[in-house]
Amino acid sequence: METAGPVRERVSGHARAAALAVDLAYALGGMALLIVLWWLGGRIAQSNPDLFAFTDFAPGPTFARLHEMIATGEAADMAIPSLYRVGLGLLWAVAVGVPTGILIGWFHQARKLTNIPFQFLRMISPLSWMPIAVMAFATWDGAIVFLIGIAAVWPVLFSTAAGLKRVDPAWFKVARNLGARPWHMLFTIILPAISQDILTGIRLALGVAWVVLVPAEYLGVTSGLGYAINDARDTLEYDRLAATVVVIGIIGFGLDFLCQQAIARLSWHRED
Image 1 (cartoon, helix red, strand yellow):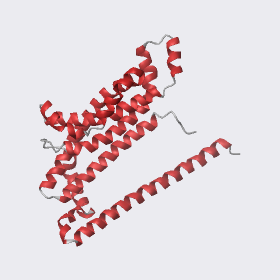
Image 2 (cartoon, rainbow, N blue to C red):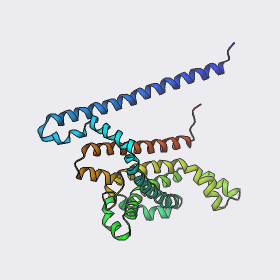
Image 3 (cartoon, one colour):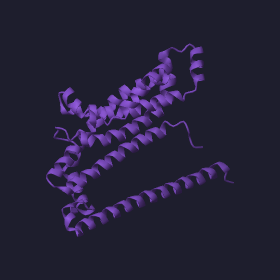
Image 4 (cartoon, rainbow, N blue to C red):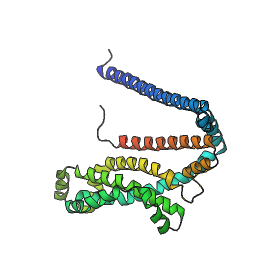
């Protein structure tokens, strides 16, 4: 006779497979709806003499140009510099945001002292710093990385501080009673406890950085996704412009998915 354990596991496996199939159907349906609306917009542009110049924005010309860009390596050539700039900007945001977030999450006085200045600075558009960045940095890449970093630091900082505030104070009391030093406290309690919050902040920061990237690359650089969009606009290659937008969306979605998977792996809540 078959035991209850294997039966339960089989039922649970079927349930997960059914849920996955439903999620996949919704995802494909949403993408199909988006493409249909996109196609309708292209048809409207094609039938309107005032918008006829924008017919290359339609799905057909866009995907044809996208295939060409992938085959020739153009898509990779434009994406690699942008990924480097975003990665470096995020690295600086994490290097500044995590220690500062731990500081204001641990010390009540530091949190009260920095609350208004940080909230004020957070609400300033990162692109407002563009003239200062251009004057302060010797290279265009340095200015772009600065703009990305200053945009991405706030989600990391505030997520880190909020995560530390939620840690049970009894953990620190037990650790001190066991003779833990501040260095041990940081690496054995604080960082493991707030790792998921830090990754959540990085995920939010990545979204902000990816949005800031394109206008930031309108500066004097001659590479990257933002430069490609600006160049395609100036040369009236609207199929190339639309294909570049698709590349930006695909890469951004992929990066966000990787962050989401990392957060799920570090989650303390496990399904039975």
